[in-house]
Image (cartoon, rainbow, N blue to C red; front, side, top):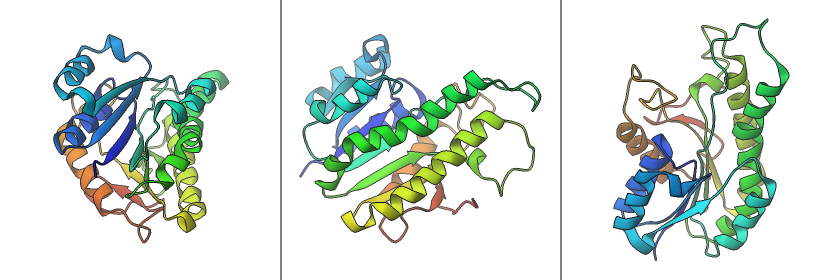
Length: 231
C-alpha cells in the first residue's frame, strides 16, 4: 500500500527537499504552504510527479485553514511532518526584545504544529506507520546553549520540544510515535551559505531517523545523524 506523507512549509529548503525525497521513493505526498502556485520549483515537481504529489494551500497562522485540512486530506496519513517555521528577528540582545515578534514566532513554530497535529491526528491513527514529526532545532536545547542570545527562536523550539514530548506520552496508547528532530545546520535561506551541510544530506538523515522511529524512541530529541540531543 502506498505510504502517505504530509509536509508543511514546502515552498523551499528542507520542506521542498522532504517532498522530493519521499516522492522519489514512491510515497504519496501532500505538500502544504501558503502560496504553492507562486513556487516554480513546486510547480515543476508537481508536473513531474503528477497524482503522487498534491499541493495544499495552507497558512498555519489561520485556524480555519488548519481545520480544513481534515477534509482536504481524506486518506490515512502515515507520516505527518510539521516542518513549517520562521526564525524571526535576529541579532537582538536581551534588552532589545519586544512582545509582538516573539509572539509571532511562538505562534508559527510552537502553537501551529500542535494545531495541525490536532486537525490530522485521527488520520495518522488510521494509518500503518502512525508517525508525527516535529522539526525542531539544536538551538532549542538548553544543555547545548553555550553562546546565549537568540532568545526568540531558542524559546520557541524549546517549547516545541515540550509539546512533542507530551504528545509522545499522550498518543502512545494509540500506537502513534512522535519524533522531535534536529535537521542540523543546513545551507538554506534560514541557515545561510556558511552552514555545515546541504538540504539533501540533512533530509536523507532525517528520513532514516523517521524510518527507525518507534514507540520505544518516541519523544526523544534526535539529530539528523541519529544521535540523541540533550534537552
